[in-house]
Image (cartoon, rainbow over all chains, first blue to last red):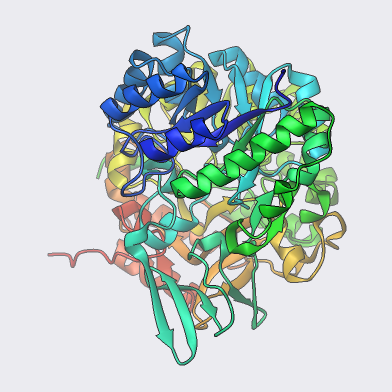
Length: 331
Length: 305
């Protein structure tokens, strides 16, 4: 059966990798345990030995492995990024996911046969940007920024003749990826160079009266009443005072779910769907990947959406969902 | 102090949506009175604003050039539409030098010399080399870098010109979503240009009441003003050649004079800080990124001995 859309799934740990493969992922993506990938959280990611085993496990079951080396190399310190590219290539990764001009340049020159996927962190939002990356570094695929509407995606694919991967489910960024400094402005650690947004060691929750106050460093990100679910204090999902009124100025704590738009995305020429969530549990990965597998298989056979599709509602961040920028009113 | 004659002051593009008369008056004074060497014109934040003032730009550019200033045209932080693309092509066709703020521009520059703007991610020497090989003649450092990282890049920068954002609210993020419109319960497609209501940005505070950000349409900036005066000598010594002042409604001619005096060594950084503080208080100064700290923090200079 020909895949309706390729299903690219998060593997934050070796256990999550096996769960995603077993649940029917067409590909998994993962990173090394350091600043070279954009989910550099304690307890996540792979050492070299784990990646070797993970690739063997996935390949034995017909699943591809993409390695994210998608942060920006720090001045005077190219070593970690060079090692990450070298090791991913040596261990047999099917592609590496890259954002930085310098890392792209190194990988393209050193491993001309290694597939390069342009990370969402590069935020290539136009056909012009994509053509630049394709002509300069020979990228095979672009992961599109989460700021485009479906009709823009269709236009862009039509103009570039490139594989496009889009985010389908999970956390939703509201800023152009790879160029957001809100977290480093508050904590001093850079999502772009350190690979971590709203690092856990800067997060605190405190009871104040009958409210729960979440902070990032010394900055109040939100205050929850007794009946409100408390969300993680990501700066772009915080509640702030504007004109004296508390509002979710940037975005609400809400998850992305594009299941109702899958046919439109397919028609737009999209190649692959990306499930966000390398920081999520094995059980979460198993459930989401299994459900998406069932949905995509049904659509491939021209059948209606299976009942499981509705079960994903409520699993998304904050228990609520949005189409994000894919639907125009978002802006 | 290392050869201050080589240090240039630049004036960044007006990031905010100012009415035309204010723009014209602003640039007239800059042309006549400000010790600024290079002026960036144009719209870097939201291309919906450009039609409001585009017609004035040739005359403003001519006047600035008659006053001996270099003029460079800034381009949008995020390019997605055909109109934005056409605008960049038109500038290049007219022989203008552009400042790129989205790498999509590299698709057009092809062999033409350009300036890499502060919104381009250049965190490492290899990235710098890629830009130079595509024709960069000057590279702006991202605002997130520390002084040590800037020094590493400036030493390596074979374009010969390294620019640092040295004054004004610090750009932190860009989006397709308009937060100004959102704060007024409007959509971007029918925004009514409410960003024009806040000539220095819309104040955004923590729930505790302490100001944190300033919103400017699709852009988020720091609330505090980045003020790099204590650090100028160190940055000059490290090879930074250009220092950028970002326009605000306070007297930018005076701000430029203060920076020029510190660069020339005719005014101490301490005195310059005090003069600026009179203009900016109660809004705080920030310089955290330069000192490898959180961007919103302020690192006071060590007491002089």
